[in-house]
Image (tube, chains in turn purple, orange):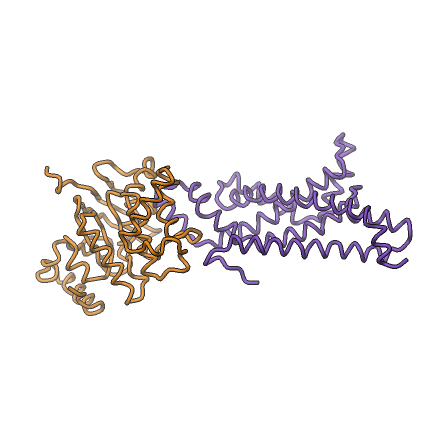
Length: 222
Length: 253
């Protein structure tokens, strides 16, 4: 079969897969980033009993393979009576990973803000946390956008791992389709192209957003 | 006690050490309403530490500090800081905010002032330092002198009882120092109470009511500029002033 005909035929199935891929990516990045903000602030400014659990959490998540984490949740928990759907496991796994990595990016970004800025905020009568939320965080979030864009792209592609835990995202749909017609090479080529188009699309969206929020002194090197 | 003699700032027996290094060894001074005192002295003698002790950005080890009769403590510090303006050597502008945003942020976030009122007051303070044209510019777009004037406007907007200046012109190119000193001179004329750490002898001679000479954690001598320049009590003061004048010139006026 020609690759174009194959594409037409595969489209309905793959489109369904793409929708799930995008859903999984978007909700995981939103939840993960929200958690990351608290992790980064806790690790940077929190007292010891807040800081250390966060350090341990981040190290464990970053130090173990994502697939192993997904398998533990998906295959490892049912014997203990906890049956999570593939989608739920994927959502939890991706969110947790995204939060750990983004927390570290954000922390780096927080550390790059001039240390004097918080002192100045306090000199105006702000509490430490008022200073963090009004002065440090708005700057740190702007600076973290490029690494965060990277994280989004990783996540988008990592969602393909959900195929291993019975979630009908793009890869799974492709496998279904290919096992019917044995056109593995062409089908996976099409799928790879799908991911590429998505990545290019989002990269452009984010650099547009970056430009909208750009202010002098916060330019990014491209 | 007449209004002019009201004590705004009173520092008693201030001590501060960093590790084994005792930077302040018992400093006392007071500042009346509308007074302008300049602190001079070699670097490392605790001048900046003294200012930072007053608003507890660096808390003192020992000693008491009173603002307008009320002791400044770690409990009331956030309220006290609203009444003590601080102008930093490196300006300390918030980089993500415009000049106007920098002046406004303390009003909206700390004083919880109405947005429009804050806007109007911030604009007025920018006008006072001659920068209403630059209101919408970001720190990265401003010159050093403009940045420091925004820093002063930001301090002024909080309507403080006292402004502390920590070497406000030391980070500036020589040709930009004048515009900042002019703003400070005008403030002094308007009766703002100011405690200024600076090496600008012209400012000290012509604007200050009193010069405080500090060295090795002590106040060596303090008095009106005329007295310190013409007839100092100690040889050390004479030496230091002579050196400063040689280095930085007599200053204009």
